[in-house]
Length: 85
Image (cartoon, rainbow, N blue to C red; front, side):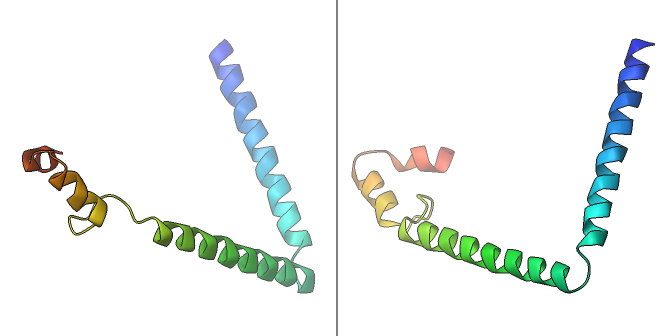
């Protein structure tokens, strides 16, 4: 019986949160909502752009043509080590 009460309480809590989110969304519709959405989109573009730049400056150690990979193979690790992983 205790478990049932807990899950019911959790469900009520979730529904309450959902209702709050919907209320906030309705309040922000119209001109103000559009501005907020545009601002978020701009910020997301900047964040994504920053992430792309970072990943380009240090390529992942996966491609066989990658100089780091070639160096590791030349450095004495047997090629079967790379084939096995």
